[in-house]
Length: 280
Ligand code: 13P
Picture 1 (cartoon, helix red, strand yellow):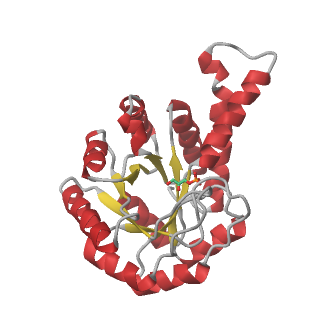
Picture 2: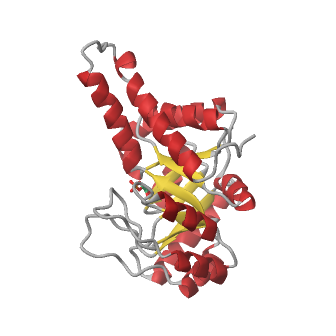
């Protein structure tokens, strides 16, 4: 069933676990995540980068996500990932998104607050909620990381914007880490304490060592984003098809190993974050 961001984050908060948020790119990645969520009886978020809506892909992808959510026996939230402005947020809701991430993290604090707050207010009208970001989460290819999220600033940000959850910079980055990251777990605890327990979001979930993921969840991470690993799983499955001398060129059959590979990745992540069995 299709649910909004608050419903699914509340489930994680109440249960003390974390919702896996998979970036999806095409029908096959949606199918792989759907199969895993059903098999594991897990609530999941399927999220989309705004660039997919800039192009034709989003036009086809949004109905596929909504079809999966409608068919699902488990809660599925359709979320916009890293929306930069009102334009992208409104457009995502037009396509049916039930959660929005507004990423104003590269802006000065006051501007980030004002922009995020305006999206929270706008989305309220249609019962959609917002994830904010404080402390700019960059790429593993950046020369340096931004300053880690400041707990006192986070408290002000949460109070003034009314976000439902907050993405934080604690040593994480997007992409496959060149060497294993060292997450600042004490900072997660400090941000939770300073904000009165706002559910926190961990971006850059591909390649964080399992023990650190578990420690971060224990400290208050309630949503973890996984994008690069979804792409790698899809590519591995498609490559296996390509290298199989008995492969079928019929595209639907050719894609089956890619769907299976995404499913296996999603199952692993669902279990890692403790979401399995939580939708029963
Ligand atoms: P990865 O691609 O590193 O898994 O990060 C995904 C993400 O955080 C999307 O917002």
